[in-house]
Length: 210
Image 1 (tube, rainbow, N blue to C red):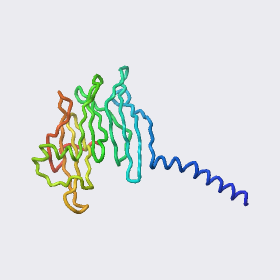
Image 2: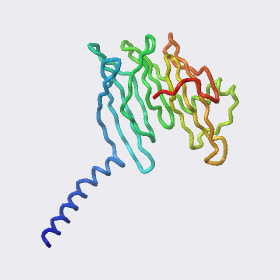
Image 3: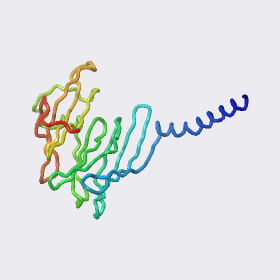
Image 4: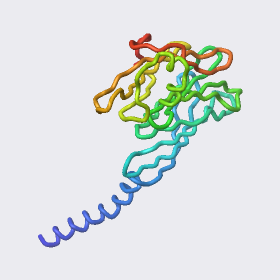
């Protein structure tokens, strides 16, 4: 009986000594790795990422390389997921002559990478609270929104052909429950390959993507 108890204690202690460093590293350390995502348009998206965490939050910094079928690979840019999970399911979407990748844009933001396999540097459009409030269409709408006050969030709601709809949730008062949302419509310039805001509304204009 004593030997059995002693064996159990030894096993538990070994598990703690082996498991704790791994758990500590995942919770507070840095992890670097690479994953590959098969693309519906063909080819693969290679994602080199670094994961970091601290007591307050966690962070994913991802570098993307697109490897088309039977063509040279191309570096297309980076994504940043701060305080939210990286789902590891990104898909390149073909819109006209452009390829578009939706990814994280840092703290409470989103990002679009737009280019072609022949381009050395892809266009980058960041949709964040700062970028939204700096746009002339938003300023013309004269919407009351407190910048820098949580909770606020920007996320891509729907993409239909060359149009993208963004839902922007923001603070409107001193209380945490004082929040509102606005729908922003963006369009892809077929010549420049860049997204620009074309509409601001209180109701969605596009069907939500699944």
